Each structure stands twice: as structure tokens, then as C-alpha cells.
Image (cartoon, rainbow, N blue to C red; front, side, top):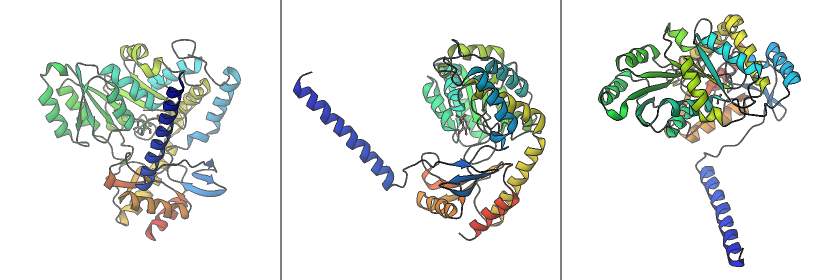
Length: 401
Ligand SMILES: Cc1ncc(COP(=O)(O)O)c(C=O)c1O
């Protein structure tokens, strides 16, 4: 390389570093810089941060299964047997007995013909959507759908129509408008079941009827519904009493199951197609077998032994929700253990988050781009592990804010 080229590449390196610094400074100036907090579990819903105990209201471990002794034992036994890494993608030598067992269990649990496990819920959404919705498709997506759905739609070659949050009339108007369009040969409606930042529930029954009427495919993201909704924790379809096997059910093991890994449950043909076409499934080393073994145990527990845990979860949810409502907080129509407390702009949300932190309550402010600028909030996430005292402490603290 000639001397002058070397100098110019160094200059460009310096320029890039300077731009990185400027971008970070701009985030800092807007109060949007994010940093990481290291936590240690400290029993039930408690965590330790720098030696101090905090009540954690920011975990999606709704049933407290992440530390369940049977799940920990299942993972440990699998580690001994298979080691840690799987060494390969699922289609090569990365499919171990726990992966296959987990898929069978998920299909049974979700009452579908088959299921496929992805490495995360994020990988599931970004893998599934481009396969079902190609160039000749239109995707209809709720405006508050999770970022992984948004990214899935960005990776797909389909047109995307965003409908107003939970607004079936708006969705119907869009479906009607595009019904006869050639480029909309396939129509895919996608929704979170439980919205991750607002905690309200999609009208899945109405969406099912609309999809029937307009010959559209319905895909639900049941990440926060699985283990939480329905009498036996099967999720949104059980909650609404819907028995339609053509609905594509995506979910994750990282929330109420207390484990790790995403999944999709549906027809055998859908699963076989995804196995052949979903890039996040094909081109990534498979989930460590121990994570799959833990997931198997978690599904068993949710399926057979989670009624009492769910009762506790919903009782806790009611205690916190009623308390917040009585104090007049805007909880955005939450219907689930995800309860937002609207704070307005970034500054106010940060102020509330810091105040809670000073009072040993861990519930960080949620800021853009996760939520719109004027709808920053504290997102309380209640679990079965909280005690009545934990919840009352949070309420008491908020009362004094
Ligand atoms: C609605 C929704 N879908 C998908 C995901 C992604 O799941 P995972 O954490 O397993 O990647 C999340 C988690 O943040 C979520 O809230």
C-alpha cells in the first residue's frame, strides 16, 4: 500500500471514531443514552445491584420459573450429557434429542401439528415473516407490534400496511381496499397478543373473524401470552376460546417459561417450509441443548403444574393495578401483568425511574425508540414471585413521588 493511501485510511478511521463519539454525545444530550446494569438474583423478585437489594419490577419471568429447581436440574443433566455448545446449525449436526423433544412438547401444548424452535423470539419473527410474506403479499401489522415483528416485515419483500393499535375497523378498511389487488395475492395479519409495552390484549377473536372474511393468514406473537393467558397457560387462543389450527402461533421460552429460545407452532407444512426457508433458523448455530432441555421441563411445568403460580401472578397483578388506578396513574388500558405508568417526556420518565431506584425499586424508564417521545413510561412487570409487601412498597413509594 502506498504511503498516501495509508494516511487517508487513518484519517478516515479517525473521522469514523469522531462520528461515533458525536452520535453518543447526541444521545447523551437528549437523555437517550442507554447503559447496562449488572444484576444478581437475590431470591423471589429481588435482585442485588452493587451489593444492594432491589425489588425487581422489570423481569418477564412471570411465573418465577427461571430458578425452578426442576428446570435447573434438567439443564444441568443435559450439560453433563451433551456439553454446552451444539457446534452446528440445526440442519447440520445441531439437532440433539432435547431440540426434537422440545418441538414435540410445544406442538402438543399449543395444540398444533408441529412446532419449530428458533434461537430467540427475535430470530423467530425475523425468520418467519419473510418466508410467509414474499413479493406478492401484503402484511397488515398493528402499530404497537414488537420490534422483532417490525424487523421481520423490513426483511420481507412484501408491502406493509400498519393499522391503528387494536383497531379492527381500520384493519378491515385496509383489507377491503387491497382485497382484489394483484400484488396482495397473499394477506398476512400480524399482532402481538399481549402488547409488550402497554400490557393490553389484541382482539384476537375479531382478528380471526376478519382474517376468515378476507381470506388472510393470522400470525400471533404470543411471547407475553404463553404461560400467562388461558386457564392452563396455553396463551391467547385458550384465553379467547379459539380453536383454529391455521393460525400461526409464535412464542418464546424466555418469558413465563423462564428459559431461552423462540418458537413457532402451526401446520406440519408450515414448519417444514420454515425449516427449509427461514434464514435465522438455517444460518445460525442451534440453541445449546441444555437450553432446550430446560425448555422441555418448563413446558411440562406450565402444562401440568402452573395453575397456582398463575393465580398468584394474577392476584399480584390486580393488587398493583388497583393501587395505581386508585392513585390516578395512566396505565394505558393494561389488562395483564405488564402495567405501564405513563410519565410523559424522557426527562419525567427518567426522574421517576431514578426516584424508584433510590427507593430500591428496579423499574427503569422506557424511552424512545421503544416508545413514542411523549409516551415515556415506567413499565411495571409483575410476577408470581412478588409478595404483597413488595407491591405495597412500590405503591407507597409512588404515592410520595
Ligand atoms: C412481543 C415480543 N415478541 C418477541 C420478543 C422477542 O423474544 P426473545 O426475547 O425471545 O428474543 C419479545 C421480547 O422482548 C416480545 O416482547
